[in-house]
Image (spheres, helix red, strand yellow):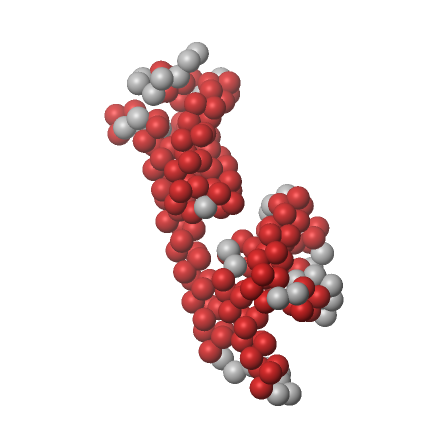
Length: 190
């Protein structure tokens, strides 16, 4: 079956509960367009996660698709758009939490002004990370969880934890300088 976006998509989605290959064809037909849209809106790294979630939700909801409400293509873009909205809402909440935490007095007062400045710089750098990266840095670098524990906790593959942590470390090193590599993002997890 070749999907053209003009009705055969709707046939494929209708057949997909009984014929998974029909959904695979929808995936192959629309993946690139959905990914490009997401990458433009949220960047390539986040688009990878959101495009996967878009098709996972579409697959889970394929029985509920209503052709009279629009095309399969529009339905897929609607799912992607909702995921962007959810992602941005979650990111705003997290940034507000970080902002409030930055405004709170430090629990352990630094010995001098240089240490205070460094802690504030660290907080700002962490706040600048993508939400997914920041969570992994905090779990690995601050909470001291292992890669495996972090993967289990976040319900993501171990390789995803490792790649996000690597990207976050690279960004942190760029914003904080090489001195932060050991203290914050890698070597010592105290």
